[in-house]
Length: 288
Length: 249
Image: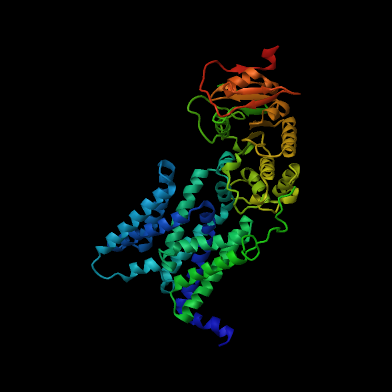
């Protein structure tokens, strides 16, 4: 089979066209948000918020509301609640998150068990299926994703300052507290947008892995963001082709390719690479 | 406590650990609110003139593994002037380079902040403060953990800023530096013990009041002061003392 055929044949299918657009959109939005998730150490929160979306989806299903809306309310609400609890309670941060995380997911499972008939759509949200995305859902992904991307890119320098040096940023007049809540709310939206593509269980990988990989490779914040988005795009496209030709789960294929990039960066990266580790690295001397 | 700092002052804030030095700076920066009393900064409440105030946090307050370059860090000093959502331009990049050259770090603009030594990081953070073009510098231990050369060079920079009419308030544990390089000193120990010219830092009685009686004076050329910081005292007796030129005459 020639290369052009290899790349073009799957595009004859509508589900593959929609799936590719959705996977790339979700990948890029997650990677850009993920830059802050990684730098602020919010990976565990991302996992918690994605699980917290589940009861929202189930409630929306039961009352016949749009699933996205239910998921979004639950995810954004949990993200903001975590922000509030972490500021107000004396518990360790990860402890509060762990409590909310397990509690909300259990609520989702409990509600789910009350539904009498078989609900494949809801189970689909646990593992995700980007190739099953309809045109209506795709439009939602595109609109919400564009809003998140637009906001993050517009105020990236403020988010960077507030993340790197919260005290210095607050002293220079930045509303650091408000920026933190905004970031958490955007994280909630990003997760809901991504759930259909990769599922509740694997969203955290989409958020964390590209940015973590990029952090092994570059030292400049702006380049980190761009590289994470590029890695996510390549993983989304190659993951879907892999899924198409080998008949593999699409979300898992994308996540595993992202993981492969991470391992390659870990092994071969210029600073942390096992192969490049030598006692005297030029350009990193502590002199002056 | 009552403390007034005039423009062009170079004020050292000294006192034992837990004396409230950092808290005082945070109050002035508007990062925390006073439980009682008022703070006026550049004619308004703290935080109102945030653009004209540059705050340098203690080294521990920053994540040094962060993937930012020296240039990106110093550029953060320009953000308040740029305004929300606006990206830096040519003037900002020039100011960043000038500030880095002022502190002798012009060569490091593209290095990761974490790849620098402790002294170099302090230099870069001071450059960030300079790039903000502030009227008031609030520096939390700007010369702690740096070598003697770096300390002298950073103090030269601060002295030049004070000469240019800027106000510099810095906390320090280095009494020799406070006495020799600053204009004024504020002695803190949960309260304001004294405020006056920097020479007073060598006053044994004041130091004893501030540090709780654990000051040893070693004889030698130029007395050396050694402070036993392990012992704190909570003796809040005695009022604050203000030593100003007009009151000392």
